[in-house]
Length: 118
Image 1: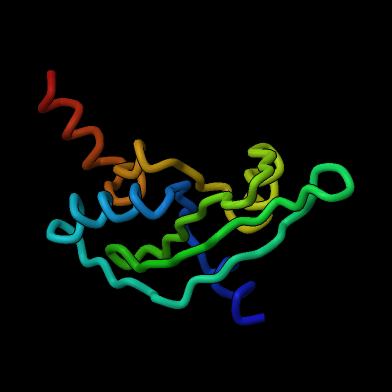
Image 2: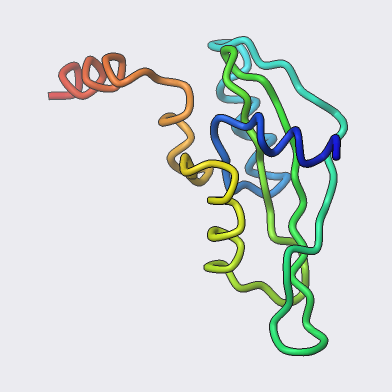
């Protein structure tokens, strides 16, 4: 139940393996308040056929007061559409490590950065 509550309280899901998550922390921890939750978990969210389970690992952080869940499908067999649909039961805000800036910046900050780059 505690694990499900963490998922329910998530504001943004970010698809990132452990290497990508480390580099996000390196890039953003000095710019934003990043409080790591060291109690992640994994869940079997479904299966492909009879014997091919789909397993996803979940890790959490509070970044600028935003509850972020980093997830990574770590099983041998993965159906990415299944994973995304399962996550959307908890939150529609999903991105990947490459677009992590969407998590931290407000829309006005994004507009300002776009104007500065012109």
